[in-house]
Image (cartoon, rainbow, N blue to C red; front, side, top):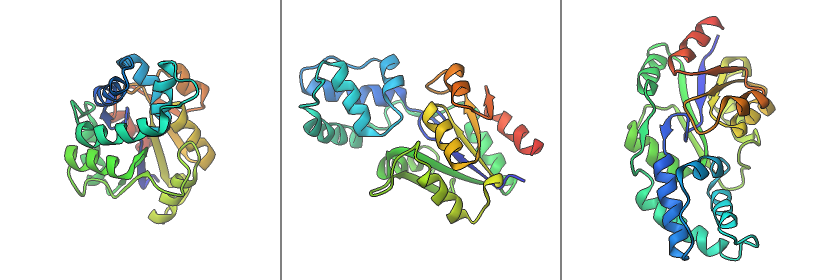
Length: 219
């Protein structure tokens, strides 16, 4: 029986592409570099803010990342102000969360975004108390696809791995679930495509949030 669903944030719960593209583009413009469009943003994100900035700088020709340390600071300042620009839940997500709560199933967020960034996104868009746990990037804990944070969540919930579903939209998410030994659900409304999810051994691939409820009933 499933007792908790753990969600990735960007591309799974929230459509944050416009905000991410805006923030990284504004950062690049600060250094006189070209903006990062939506399609490049889609593939540059997923492994934390520093990796996102690094990829944008390399795309702009700074292959030695000479601007990296300053760019991290600039991005953090911009993101703190503009991280919610045009951000909204994907269609069906709010209804899904309501259904999970009514069923007594815990909802958790696990993201490579900073802890403060995750909390700001979640609390501003969904409100406080909707999720049982919120895990963002934390000092001393490796980021996904390392399974450490996912295993920490499972331990904190006091559940076993067969009682968990992990939901995400990227290879990073599928690898995280695989390494932790939990069932993975890849979503097609997010940042990446079906091929990437299949190549990274998603247990389920879905088109609509309501399909998660069907999977729960099956198990």
